[in-house]
Image 1 (cartoon, rainbow, N blue to C red):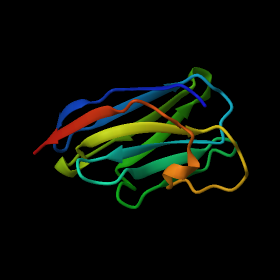
Image 2: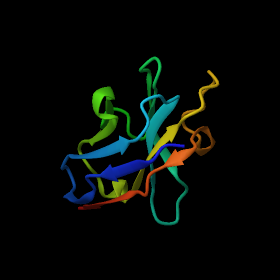
Image 3: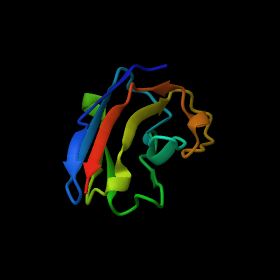
Length: 125
């Protein structure tokens, strides 16, 4: 497992942009990504990157509004969120998979073995 720490959450207005950051303690990963969980809802995958190839998957719900960037030198994964909506209010989690089987289910929580503590994002309309 890898230790992950998210930051950058907070209060935003609808239409604003916000960038979340996740710093990890491991350079060699199979995959890493971002999920969110709103009150009363299941944890939802927003996007993830296959570390070896750099291929990025985005959920349809955020495609075109959210973007994932990684900084290998800083062991950092960023989630840039644009045109925020009240429906984006949730706890946002960074996650990583340390075992690379070569088969990926990036939108499944079962893909990952490490999770950050979460950072709250509240969007007011």
